[in-house]
Length: 432
Image 1: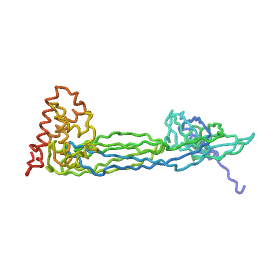
Image 2: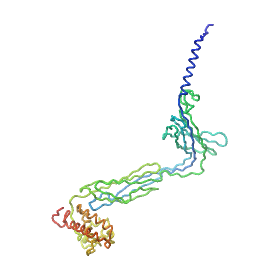
Image 3: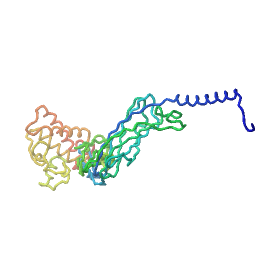
Image 4: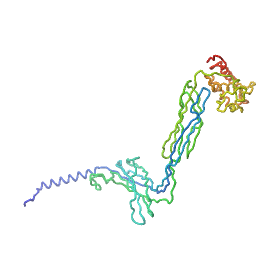
């Protein structure tokens, strides 16, 4: 018949073979792919929260801003740290939060792990309806290795529906789940077919709001960077835990160790405040300038001069007295129970304590007035200071008498100008 074509037996056979081969290739491709399996669980906790979010600021100051630190005459700096907490925002939030824990039960790593969390509701009987959908952040652990588990936190905010019952559903998918690979029975096309478990959990909303404070506390620390040639000792090194606005004060004693004379160097202190929850950091610095004075300048005077040039006379008062512990001659002298002035007025009568104390006070005042020191004088002052800190005029070991008298004699030579920059009454002081 016209238009009718008859195939030979050999042609039909060839087509059948071709179709079988083509089908076999497709099936073989799908079956050759290796996938993995997933299991998942979830928790859900409803909440009503009144969120109070705080912010902090930090200020720092130092007094004095400039100070001269000479050998044997430490300086004291007073620092103040002011931390201020303010309420930055007050909001209300309602929602559900929890964790979605996923386990890879196969022997292949997951591919394209995705978690979508859905809040569902219903009023009365019937089916649950999707209400709010949120994509869960899996960037902390995007791939699960064979046999590996990981829990991903989530939070979904929503407006409540009157009289509703709630549940939460997590839709966990990967693109290499066994049975759902491209070319397989459930995924016939060439494109990936995401698949995975959908764990659910019911939850309810509390009737009352819970107050939640964010960054209500902070940690305050202070970093001291002591310049080379000086020693810095703080009365309080922190850290300080703050539950609200506060002012922290502390003193820093700066001593001369090996800094050269005629030196001017900055001492920078940096305070750091870290907010507890957000870990936001605030810093504040204070700058004090340290100087060591000129070399070989000044002159010395004997303890007789300093004894008579106090506020009690008979000579006019020497203002250097104000530099003795910043309180003048009425400041208690170590453990003696006497003021500096009273110690100088006490006749030694062979008491090594008073013999040394007279020369020690005079040497201290000479250095504070601008006289340069010497290494042996620094040694004598250091030993004497330790001696007075430990003993009283009536309680001192006989074994230390010779040492005390030795240093008293050395300081007497310094005060009289035999060593050091020279006595102030000399026409031409001769430094050692």
